[in-house]
Length: 94
Image (cartoon, rainbow, N blue to C red):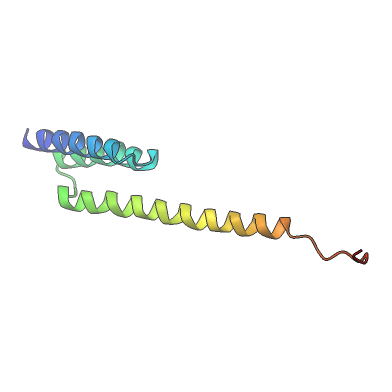
């Protein structure tokens, strides 16, 4: 019973926090997936994370997703700039 109450409270607090911080859908989906799975594992006496470790997992997932998005944006900018640069013209300038 304590596990369900703790995980429900944790989920509600984190969901409200993610909403107010306007976090991307990936962070919300990770929360939506990981908290109930962790609660189910703990209820079934399987290996589960405590709430502090669960917070670190969610933080690491969100930061990893942000980092990959930043790398993707840089790669797209470099690709676009290399496509837009034209070779010098062979015709003389007037």
